[in-house]
Image (cartoon, rainbow, N blue to C red; front, side):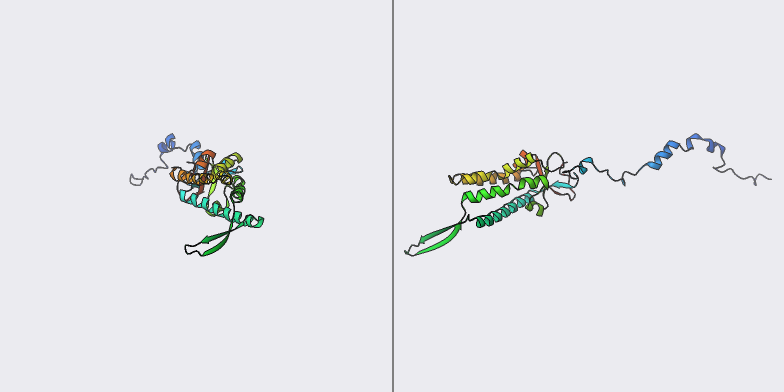
Length: 234
């Protein structure tokens, strides 16, 4: 056999390469590569808080805007006024009032209407607004808040409010009804009702965290389903 017929050694036949420990497979490395998972495709494990009663996914909600919150509050008041009006009519709370007006030419005309005094209106309003407390504790929302996709949670962690928190929130949000009932004694207390409500709206509009005074004192927040912004608890 000539030199031209001699086959050249391949990489698989090279004894130096085959014996090189640097190129040999490490059993530990091979085991790790077999069990490793790409972080980009790995599913995030469920947090323990999500499985506890009353808790929600902290990444599923973001802070509600001021406009949406005010709309929910006004809609709640509208529902309350409708219920109060109906119940007062059933219980006979509406009282007829007749007024006679004299014109400049001496002619007169009479107008009849119905009137609901402060004790009936504010008393029933406060009574039915109390239902917001168990609604916040059990479901996190009143009927109007549900319609607008709003939920009320604890500000510190993603869970529903406790009974003390919900009670404090109601007192600050609807405490003006007590002054409304007392206005039957002096009309001056009616002004307190208006100032109280105006202060709530101003406080909510000026708060950078979209939390009103009732939220700050009760350590609560109002959230909506998240659409891409930061979590309500970030």
